[in-house]
Image 1 (cartoon, rainbow, N blue to C red):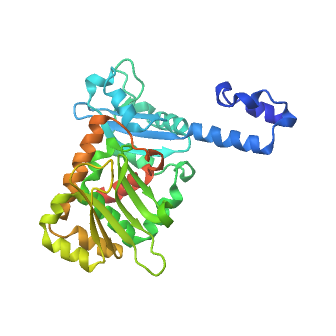
Image 2: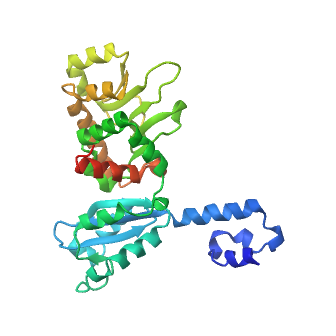
Image 3: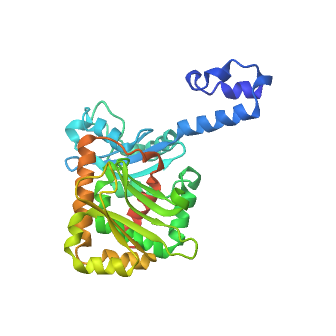
Length: 319
């Protein structure tokens, strides 16, 4: 009886084959599948949007990739007139509707009632809402074990902070999903991280194995060849340059490979010409994704909460 009562909470369209089975035919496997599917339906994002022409902020939630929702918001009234809106803060959570309701309830006294046709504008500082997001129940934060693992490795975390600053990738927060950041993927025997822009990788570092150091790859513009010191440095780190290795890559692309620790990778970023070559390629690729308005094939692997925490620590100068 309890099983049938629980099933009433599930929408008809989500599990049609199981709704018509007698209770004794619903196996443990079926119920596990129901639980997983129902849990996935609850997952999504809560976000805080700001606009340069509006004194209010928008607090909302979505089960879509946020940049798609932001596009809708910027084309629909009453928000269109008050925009353009951009992403200030965000979290990927286990139950976005629950968190959205909690946020709206917490700040209900600040709800803006002078703008009709909406219930998500608040007369608040975005920083105040960000502080609330930092305190949400850890059980709601998706992929948290990998985030904890990242920050337990200080050398790794410091490199990522440097890379994010160096490439200005945080200026493209609205475009997350078109660019993606995954932590500790199992690709090719294991990596620390992978960054994709659109359909291909632009940076990764492998996990050391067989007594060999990590292999780092950063994809950039071919103008890197104009800097001889970089070529000498790469040669001394058992590295190489490989041209246009991705069929989906943009013209004049070069993948730079080298071996070493994250301290060695930091040294590479400081070489003259490296930043110029990376930004030349990454920025053009990001603009291209923005114009095409398409998400990456790897968007489901994007670690939103890792980006949010890196952003917080970078802006607070704690990393």
